[in-house]
Length: 175
Image 1: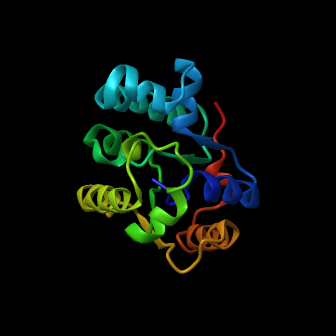
Image 2: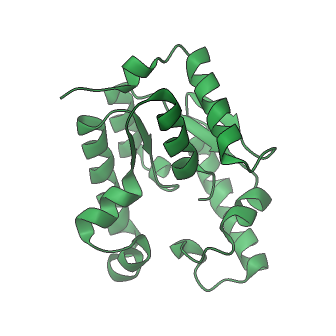
């Protein structure tokens, strides 16, 4: 939530020359509704099931860089899908205050709906405490607190991928 997965992922994919897909967008497109509407209508558990379906679709058909929703990493089923596919996982790590600065004025986060800034910070802190053990399973952790610049974060991500021996060709998948 606010780590920069979509913005940084899109830019990194452009730099590398590979596809980019965001599982939230897949879910929204297939449901014909926004994430906020889905949360309100079907609840978080059903949304997470739709998210898992989107992850599976993206892994099987797209390749490239795939941005997962912030809660996707909290399902063992998703980790199994990622590991079986051979995907390299990346955690864009940020403090609760950094995340708050990135999302507070957007009004698009269902888990923060109706909260004032102090309540948002408390909620983000709580979510991060719950989720971070899952996030730390990632192959690469990239700290993002020092820069809110999406281009600098994308540069750092591409550099880390290169250090890990991931080439553009490996990010392209043909069906």
